[in-house]
Structure formats: structure tokens, C-alpha cells
Image (cartoon, rainbow, N blue to C red; front, top):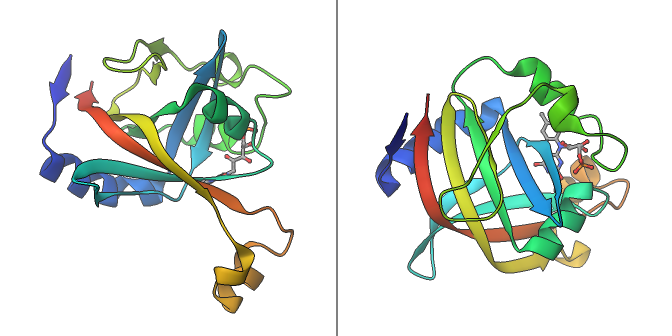
Length: 167
Ligand SMILES: Cc1cc2nc3c(=O)[nH]c(=O)nc-3n(C[C@H](O)[C@H](O)[C@H](O)COP(=O)(O)O)c2cc1C
């Protein structure tokens, strides 16, 4: 069963759930992949509800989102620690993480990318803007703490075109 959510509902729930980590799922040309994210935000930009995801250059996820221009976010409402650990340490370049983590997929409502079918908050997003970080614009402490290896994030601003809860 799915329950549609208002902006106020999913913005508040996302703020609570994102520190517990989430799945960012991408798909292109029959290849489906998901990775664990710990950073991200929901807000209003360009008069639209937007989820901003930060993806480092090295991620296979980056290759897929660049090609598809969309992604889904699943914020678990059940214990999925094992799957989150696997999807946050292995790359879809090397293996089928969906199968390895025994994750089930379901069709998206408004995008071609599937969602992770589990109890959770589901956000379906279409990329409307992207920007790779410019090192010279970054606070020096953040630079040292988060980017010593030079693997900067690209920020993907995704318009949230569907938001609902799955059981
Ligand atoms: C708790 C946690 C949070 C993470 N958050 C992010 C994130 O927000 N952005 C990112 O690019 N990588 C993040 N990662 C790392 C990726 O999930 C990891 O590198 C993954 O193997 C990439 O998979 P891929 O190559 O299939 O895209 C996180 C990892 C963990 C364990």
C-alpha cells in the first residue's frame, strides 16, 4: 500500500530520516543500481520541491544519473542496515548490488527509475540542475575534512515529481 505525502510531511520526515541514511537508485539502458547516501536535503527552489543529492565523481551512480537525468530516493522506515552497508561500500560497476543485498524493486510512479520496495519514504526526482563543486569556493576546513582525495561531489537538484510512503 502507498500513501501520498504533502511537501510539509515529506520535508519533515526526510530531515529526520536522512541522518539514518537512504538509498539513491539510478537506472539506464537496463542497468539498475543503488547506493547509500548520508547527505541530501529537501527544499523549495525555483518554486518547486527539490531534493539535492551529492554524488562523488568516482561513483557508478554518477555515470547512470548523468545518462538518465533522474533518480529515486528511498528512506527506510525499517531496519535495512545490512543492505545500506553493502550498497555504501560496493560499486555497481563490479556487482549487482540489488541482488546481493536481496533488495526488491517496484516501478516508479512518475519516473522510469524504480524504487526500493520496502517500508519507507519514496521520493522520485527529475534532475533540473547540476553543479560540480568548485574547490576554490569551498571553506578550507570542509576541504580538508571531506575532500583530501580530491573526489568532489556533483550536486544533483532533482524536482520531486512523486512523494509517498510504502509499507
Ligand atoms: C553511510 C554512508 C553514506 C554515504 N553517502 C554518500 C553520499 O551522500 N554521496 C556519495 O557520493 N557517496 C556516499 N557514500 C558512498 C557510496 O555509497 C559508495 O561509495 C558506493 O559504493 C557507491 O556505489 P556506486 O559505485 O555503485 O555508485 C556513502 C556511504 C555510506 C556507507
